[in-house]
Amino acid sequence: MTHASDDSSTQASMTAGRLDRRGLGILLVITGSLSLTWVDSSAKWLLLHGLDAGQVIFIRFLLPCIVLSIVFLPRRGFGILRTKSPKIAFARAMCMIATTFFNFMALRYLPMTITGAIAFTSPLILCLLSGVALGERIDWQRWIAVIAGFIGVLIIISPDSVPLHPAMLYSVGMAVALAFYAIFTRKLAGVDSNVTQQFHASFAGLLFSLPFAFQEWTWPQGTWSQVALDWFFCALIGSAGLFGHTLYSAGHKFAPATTLAPFTYSQLIFMALVSWAVFQQGPDVNFFVGLPILVGSGLFIWYREVRIGTRMRPAARPPR
Image (cartoon, rainbow, N blue to C red; front, side, top):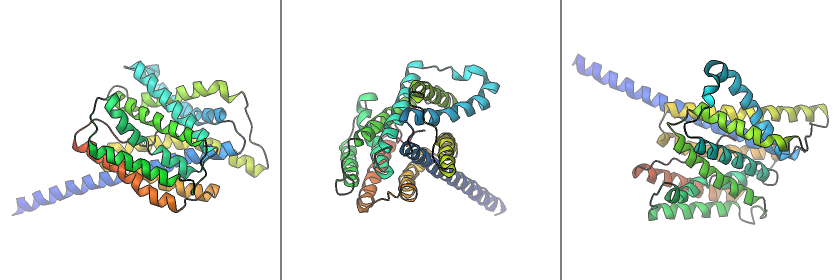
């Protein structure tokens, strides 16, 4: 009886430990989603206050480059920049740049609820691309989920919710780039370390934006409080991106992606709250009607891919 009791106690302790680790992983991913929300809000703030898109992209990548260089180069040297698959690493970095550029251009003109909803069609686009990129067959269940997801987005961005704007095409471009980014990230899994991938994306973004950043460089202007806020968001846009990615990576060490996938959609809720609190652009009824359809379709696609054992993962928001 004693041995049986000890075994039961040990098993219960191990189960509780696994649940604690999964809970921590979920908390890290939710916190990472909140952090990445501030990348979008910071970009929108700076763009609305007169900074050029190239300048904002440059500022976005500057701080991560500095922090990564200080933390990792002294310990690991320049070998950490070496990739075993340069073509895929280059393609991934270009997708990262395209994602950031399209997103920031859209944020200048559109509410965050709209850009966020369109961005989260990337799992649907990824599902469609998987047939071409990975030679997978898309079954009818996933076709229905993809169609339903796009219907959910159409409800959110319907003309009675927000006037149709050409900048929505930027958000569509961002969603497509994000889907390709997810494909190339999966191809690099187990090939390059996460730190190496972050180095490539950050330095590529910095170098790409450098020629454009100083063409129309604008220093924060206005009262001292306005200038202080602008500098605050300049610091926040880089630190929030780096912090958010770090939390995402840490979260996946404590819990499997199947557990964490639903919680990546918490970013849409955070974006709605921040959009309302900072920019007075709160969500309307259509957002709350279309959101469950979009989220449900994305989660169903993820569930189907897990069931059939595919190698794809949901295209959660990338480091901005």
